[in-house]
Length: 432
Image (cartoon, rainbow, N blue to C red; front, top):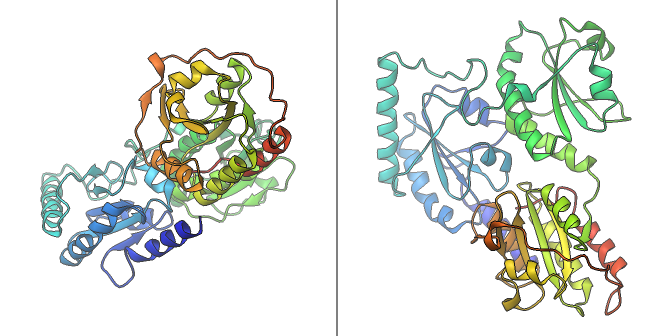
């Protein structure tokens, strides 16, 4: 894995730097630079390892220089800042979005990739923006209207309203992690935070299955609870974890920052995932319904399990991102023939690996090598919405036989196998 690591690191340095006119955007400056600005923005979401992104870079820089002072041109390393890419539905790289009159509803740029085509696209968007303003349809940046609007907005109802009466029961007695905002209705900063807090609440609820929750306390009404925590200024955000003293949230105020912190808290707090043998239909159902992707390894009887343990451990260290919640399952070759045939595994030999999304009844098969590099590449492709997927045999889950647990003979003992793998799937089984 060493070589892979180096080439990624070198590529990361290469795309944009302070010496060109492309503005580097991150979760901590995106809100200030783009959302709250009156300028028209062209934003490229890229990944340093992606060839098309590297090809685009010189033209993107050229366009940025030509448009300087007229249209802002930015770039987001969406491989590093996944929360930001996820928020705008980025599925592949490079994706270019135009942030115009309504910053909460950017448009997808569909034009050519040459600097000339990019400049033309920008000037057209600019002309439309000015026309809209002239006809009075849009007053500059409409970010500050309440609710945040747009598909990237959140749902206010995902923010839990906390009061003097329900605070202890909801927050202190809960096993979940809470981020609580103490606000005052008259406070301007609180109004700016509101759409960000709502959007983050929705994303965090989905991505942590409700294990991290966002709440809000009107401190002017609920003075007992606000007094207890010594709230002096607004908004104040505190983090509550069961059995621990509350701590102050020190991060940025954009949805990207808040989501990122919440996911970190989630992985600190979550129990390690188990690697389960598919012994019955129940195991498969329960495990796969709880995660976005179910990774199933089909292992030959004699496989030295240390090999797969090693692969899973290395894969997850290399990948270290957070697009998917993963569950890991394994079965012995030949034990679940219907499952194998619905995944089209039989013909490929063993060990084999497939990723299943049970909600969409889709699966993808590892076609590269069953090795650290092969699996890393497979998971990375899936995480950016590439990689070829197929519908699970006839759109229904195959029949699963109830089998006896592996007795651990042949090669390594299964206990060792399981322990090792559990150690490796770090919590959210975080993915590229």
